[in-house]
Image 1 (cartoon, one colour):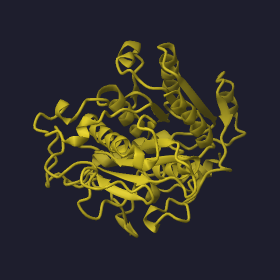
Image 2: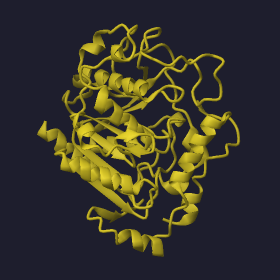
Image 3: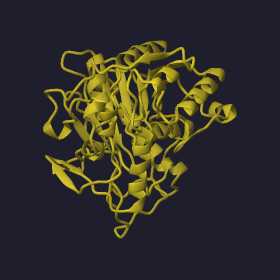
Image 4: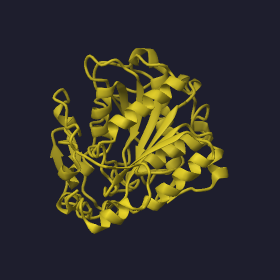
Length: 379
């Protein structure tokens, strides 16, 4: 990893609002969003040369699951992706502030997971909730400006099918990171979806609610997506239990909140008594595995190391991926040990010399896919 590759990831100062096809890059207009961008920039850091003294020190920390990361097999934008889903090479060396802040296309009409049939053959975008029936505690009004999403934002899911000719093995629900201030879909979840579909996984990217909404509201968005996939498991050619969640940074924390408190039979009424359950709420929001990609169970920037608290979540097998130059490295290490010690099936990949925020880059996707296939066989 060369320092100049990582330096391109600076995202604190944005140049303005730009349109790329159907995808809009937002301008930071308030301190909260800019502080979130600063946090990501700080976490990504400057990186280190692969032969540097600092990396030699990292490699001597005694990590038994450490490996040298590689971009050799990193997948770029597939030829069959529409232009609006162009994420570039998928390599950390090509990340930019524009890619970090590009927004995924929203549903063109009022197509929702409740009123629309699943399409297993094409990219499909659906709102997660019916209008006027979105469980929430937060009131987001028109006069509240400067956030990544507008006040009338509706959470949605983007379904990306397996590659042509590939037999489905299961589904992965993806949540991008961004410090709860933005969703880095074009550096985190979209490149990972493009890679996982080659290994037989139907992928679903959740554009969950961000600030000013709270973590619990985003967890319900994740649950809604899982319910939709389970309802349509036969359409997607998978078993209903062969569904995993995966999150990057804040997206992993969001996945953890779902698994800890808002999965299975918990529905929107747990947070909002005015919510009216519908037929999707009759389907358990069950996920059989979790992928923590430079992330952990806990709150923003703070992993929870309490074994009693973690045990209450009845957590599924969990796969960690992180780099030795991540500022949260020690927390990842500590939680991995805690999770293992309470009997949760775990695995991990630690990339020597890699920072926070590498997305699908680094050579970890194939090992994760093999692990997940084995987990699904255990169900």
